[in-house]
Length: 259
Image 1 (spheres, helix red, strand yellow):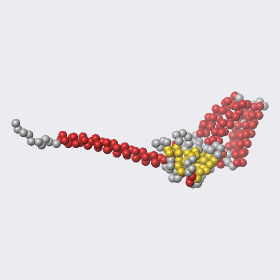
Image 2: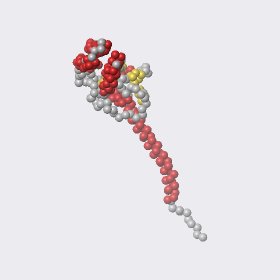
Image 3: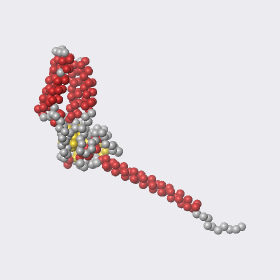
Image 4: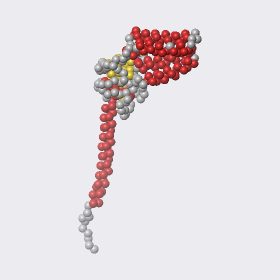
């Protein structure tokens, strides 16, 4: 069962794709999500080494240009360490993740924290971690729909839900859509908001209730009931008026007496 709080389902959003396509990211993504533990450790070591270099250079009063300029080769090394993305989607697997436009926000955040860091690098260097955390959030936050169930990935954890445990969906007024389980508990679906709900239902292949079809059917029934009530009311009003009109239209058949 489902409990949508909205009465009118939205149209397909810009993130909703047609059948046979994906959301801009393949179901077997590259990047950090598909990196092996060893490669992730290497990337973390490179980033940590750069941060240590910046802190030590600040204490030793090294040139600011050297400290900041080294970020370019560090970024190149990290990019080379990241696995390349495959363009071949996995049949029956659909990934609903944070839209890639979020990286624009990460870039803006990086610019915002860069200028305070330059002004006081010895103290404000932890601000450089904010863009890294934001990228980690974009990469990690997603819900994968497959034949076996739902795989939920957040910044700090992953969880698998079998289809047999999922009894419906719950749509809160704010926040992510939730899956209602067989024990009446609810689990938040990462990156699945109300605008991505249609995409989730279509990817489930009928395993999740189509709240949009139910809402449309309920709306059609309501309109039909309103039309029937309006017609009955019109007929009820038209009955006495028609009888009065017929009475006026009947000729006077009573004989007149002559005086």
